Image 1 (cartoon, rainbow, N blue to C red):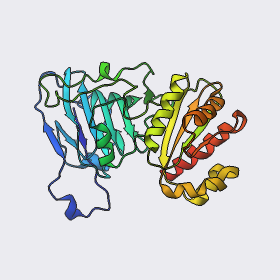
Image 2 (image 1 turned 135 degrees about the horizontal axis):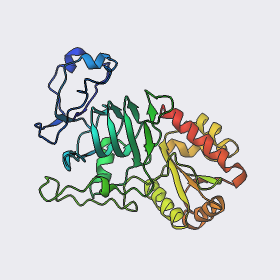
Image 3 (image 1 turned 180 degrees about the horizontal axis):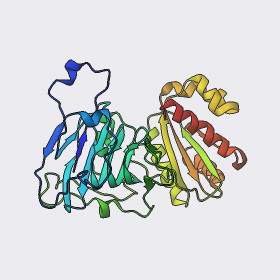
Length: 344
């Protein structure tokens, strides 16, 4: 078993750390189905880290301030914890010493340590981190309930900033793979069932249909089906988010694939560096707010996106790659800038 916990900033004073925490905890008692980890005396003693010397807390699941956390134990065939609306903060969402767990999580930061056999459908604004963990499988967040869009907004998270597949392994092992991506066909509710009739959240109208998911379903780091990608950028306006979602629907309906999305702020010098020859017409637009960028992939995607821009978004300020010979350069320029901007 193990815990989800909130790791506070090192800048916090000791006095603040000693205050009563505001996280929600669920305590569980050991049952015959629960198997403690790390007690095999035949194995070599694990390397000791500073946090290993701290006082241990067992069988407690403490949820810091992130939006959604559904944790399902395959060993116990039941939820060990599930929380929906929580206040936002800059704290981490971290999992330690968990085994054979399936999760649906939306958070600012995601980290695991000493975990085994995890399946995570993730929306993470920063780069997910695993440490001393094996058998971790990541999938793109696919979830909907009516209040979820407001929860993202209240938490200060963008539905377009999801780095679920950009995992950093702090403790790689030569010749071994500690993490991988779930198959594209992986179904959320087959891994993490919706809360049942005896749950406090039974009234929540949950859907895991990718078409209804608040967070767009992206291909992420998987191999692209085509060598042709297109950059499509919406500049800030009254309906920017709705327009971006509509563009995704239009493109995917034509058989194109959404690879990645980003929502970032830009300065005039950023516009000149990223958009180069097209920068002069775009500088004034970045003062209105963040831009939303989409990478769409598929043979003929550039021409199709230009047609959609003219037919559907004629009165909206957008940037679309001009031709397939330079479109991959457009994609690299923007998303490299966005990753640097977000510290990835």
